[in-house]
Structure formats: C-alpha cells, structure tokens
Length: 322
Image (cartoon, rainbow, N blue to C red):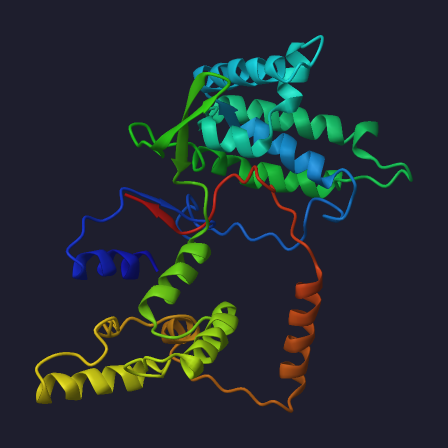
C-alpha cells in the first residue's frame, strides 16, 4: 500500500510525504506478529469506557502552555464582560469547550517515557474499584489487558510526533474579548477515509445524493424560465460528448462550465485494489451461507456506535503529511 501511495506522488511529480501514519505493522520485527484475538476491555458500552478513552488521550497528548494560557485569558475577560460573578480558574476551564481547545491550542505528544508511565498508572487505577460500574462490572479484563499492554507498549514510540515536522498550520486569527487568538489546523485531525471521500467527489463527475433537491430545483426553474439554458442534463458522459463534438464543429465547448474527468491512471480503488493483492476474482453467490453470514455481520456493525476518542482522537491510519 505504501509503495502505491509513493507511486502516485511520483506520477504527479509532487514531493512525497515525509510522515505517514499507519494503524498496524509500524514496528513489528521481521517474522513476528502482534495479532490479538481478544480485547482487554469488556465492552465499549461500559459507562466508564468514554472516561477511559479520554484519560488515555491525556496520557498521550499535552496542550501547548502558551496557547492554553492565552485562551484562558480571553475566556476570563469574556466572562467578565458577561457579568459572571466570582470567576475562578476552575470556572474558566469549564467554560472552555473542546472545540475551542482544538481550534486555538496546539497539542504535542508527551514523549515515550512519560506516556508509558501515565498509561500504566491509569491501568492500575482502573484495575481496582475505580474501574467498576455501579453493578460491580469491571471495565477491563486484567489478564487480557496485561498481555495487550505488554505487547503494545513498544508502539508508544510509534505515535510520538516526529521532531522537526510541523503538524499545525496557521489559518487565521480570532479576537475574543480583546484578546487575539491564532486559529490552527492540525494534520492529525482528519482520517484518510474522509479525505478520500472528498477526492472521489471531485474527480468522479456525478451528482451527489445530497444534491438531489438542488437538481429538482434546477429542473423546476428551467421549466419556467424565459431564457432556455444551453444543456438540460446532469450526465457527465453526455456533457463531455456534446463538448467534444462542439469543439470539432464550432471550435468552442457547448457547455464551458463543464469539467471533463481526469485521465485514468490505472490505479485500483476499493475492492479492485484488495483483489489485486490476492490475484483472486470477486465471486459472490447471493444464495450461499457465507454471503448470508457476511450480510448479518454488516447489519450488526451498523447498529453499534464507535465512541473512540470522540474529539480527542489520537491518530488515524494512512494519513500523509507533507
């Protein structure tokens, strides 16, 4: 997969990324594996699960002291302007939302040693009475979690920020209560899947499902307008064919606002890419028991809610930063 990513940059004559985030095989020794068949926690529906994940994020990241101090100063002045009495440091911190922290404050990893120390302290606390709900159900399976932590502890080094690589970009400023705050965009903040969906929307000429109402509105407006439009179609293939013929006959495109699709580079996407690694054709028997079981697993997966880190996500897989 990494080789294919690098090939894309090479074909586009663009410098390759200097940092690439992955979710597996980051430091597995040659010939070794780190697959775990069981989880170390009982269920992500446990009432202490969000607290555990948030605390784990704190073990990994720390806020920039200068950015946080400036945001606290702005928030304190804002509360004073609103006439809030008895403003304390605790009140100021509680009034700062996670969105404001992510927008105005940068984060950095604490370092390998500090993260390991804090994570082990967190696990020790949750193995006791503090890790049980009101019914006495433990959040963590101590035996499984000890094994998982023993195996995964070496990956703490992999999630540390690379020295010399700036992960934040300044995107503007905002003034709050007379205090100027810098707004930042972080390279760790979005998943590769989100970026890929955006890329699909740009290079495949089609009408997204969310624009169906807009399409119907355009058709309704075109039916009553006094000036007919040049081409009443939302088909990319048809618009491209009409423009090609118009260039040959009239020397100009019939629909100048249409952008033709980019040239196919031969790159495989989705299932085609996965099958290219195995060399096996895609064969699905809709009446087979295997297909029925697979569909049942998909239905069950859609019902669950992955809370994860919420707004405090640690890092995401296959996200390049250049």
